[in-house]
Amino acid sequence: MFKLARPRYVIKKYAGKKYPKKDKKLITAEDIIEKFITPKLLDKKTNITTIGSCFAQRLRDYLIEKNFNYKDGKWDRVYSIRNIKQIMQMAFEPEKLKIVEPIWNFNGDCGDPYIKSVEGRPMKIPCNPKEAKEKIKSKYKHFNKILKECKVLIITLGQTEVWSHKDAPETAFYAAPFVGIKDGEKNHISHDLTIDEIKHEFKEIMRIMKKNNPNVKIVFSISPIPLVASISDDYSAYIAANHAKTKLHSCTLELMKEYEDVYYMPSFELVNAHPYSAFRDDGRHVPQNFANKIMKMFSKLYVNE
Image 1: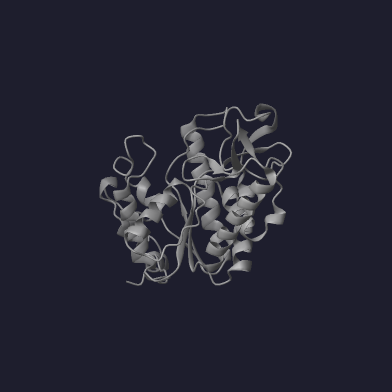
Image 2: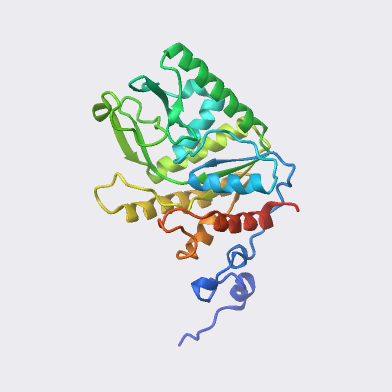
């Protein structure tokens, strides 16, 4: 009969790579990054920026507080991997964006459907198309400068559900459209990105960045913050949120192996190891003190102190 033992070569090669056998509450960052071999990518003088979902804002706040050389792209929260790719297209390949709905007009208060402002609304633009185009062009120029000059870029992937105009389904609005947009119910459609589509967007992000900033070091992370609501009719928002994170997590860990200077920050893992202490009372957002723990882990992995 088989004995409950493993061959010596298995024991020798994989020793120490076991899942931590301890109470979940006792799991530490060290348990998660054990044998995680990474280079030191930056110090406090290195030009660094972040892009992505709400969680990227928490990382930004930490970098600013600790006096890193943080450069603000002023793209606010960028929720989906498609939207992140579009920010890079705006910066480097605006001619590839198919935009058929350039302005949302709310009784004379106009906004860009594809860029979010810090006020939590579409970026305010003039209602005059020519003037709006000039402001948008200036914004694209700023995106270009930040992404072209950054030495380290942290990309936080958050959601997979997107909204767009039916005549340009491959171009996503920055978020779900507001009620009251002219012909919105007739023209706006929603979609949950498939694994193949996520992989395509990931590869496009890498293509655009490496073409325009060949030496940039990119650190990917998966936002632990679940979506606030879901378009799915098949199951609850809770299940949809976990489905989204599973797709993003799987695709990222698989594809990053194909590229040089691409790394991973296990923020998703650390938060989900502490589900009762890592979230605010709303059950969604990570408080700044826990985000600071994640950034300390980031510093241990990647910062040359």
